[in-house]
Length: 153
Image (cartoon, rainbow, N blue to C red; front, side):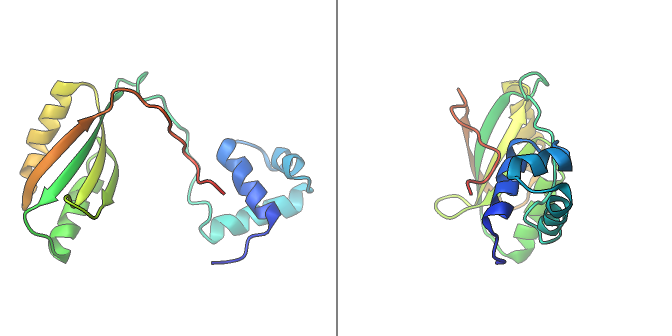
């Protein structure tokens, strides 16, 4: 890992709060002139500290506020099965996050749906068609207490 100084960290923290700042605005917030801030930001992007810039959308307003965490257990798992599962999940827009986990299950999925019927169809038509899927357990979100998009630095 490269060494990041306090200014680099301040740039990252500031961009996590508002990635739409101009270089001039960002420079004012970190007390540097625009040119070195621009160069630092480009270096942080090139080295992969900044992966991408996105807009955070309101799932409820878009009709996708029914959130389900789904634990998936495979009947068996090897490289080929894991690769095929990952390909299906990456190509499935309802799944917004997927983690290979330890414990009783193999994967944890975060799924955005319109309602229970939509989720049921997703289970039957997507998850239910995956070879080597043994079982799944669904956990339905009743209320979002905290959702930070950034990394604490």
